[in-house]
Image 1 (cartoon, rainbow, N blue to C red):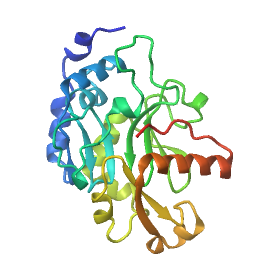
Image 2: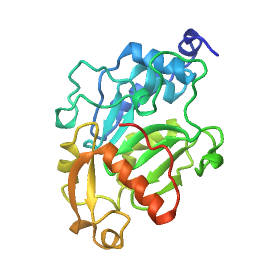
Image 3: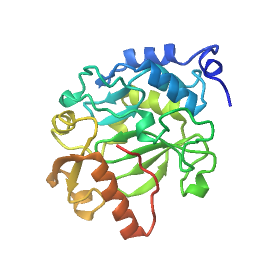
Image 4: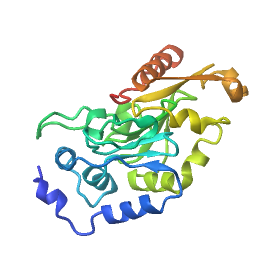
Length: 250
């Protein structure tokens, strides 16, 4: 078990590069201020160094609300400050909250076997960093790779990249490519009005034949993201008999 100083006092920390990538991104974003104490505590609990992009994000950044609120990437946000998030929200969860970190450092605690939730999108899609044995958790991909629970298929998809490459891709307008079949005219206004704990319920459901045939004719409304994730889990069990596992606490 490494001490906090061993995790923070490293050569070539990721934050300067990550900060530069955030500043240079052409994608609209909001970056909440960081809670330094939460950042240090989360890094210590994760036992990753500040050399990694995950460590740099958790230690130095309150998270990122990307592309008119469409994608939330979790960090360590301060609770009692105005963030300027879409919808005036100050309630973007932290990586620690989303993954159920203990309140105080616990050397015996580890992230769940089915991985670490690092982001959500407004459709109820979930980005997870694979754990040591993805196969045993029913996840595709290799250890340390990011996988995606897709709301239009209710299945996990391997993205074949680690956290740093995943984040860099989205900062370089990767959302346009990743979501090119899941957006409709006016989506920015709808996603931008949400708080940090809301999502968009789409009816007919995104995985239905009706939505696949004509996404433009669907109706959408803001709902708690937790409700949307629960709905996706229930339908995955009902339609495929497969439990998608932990999708994050929001």
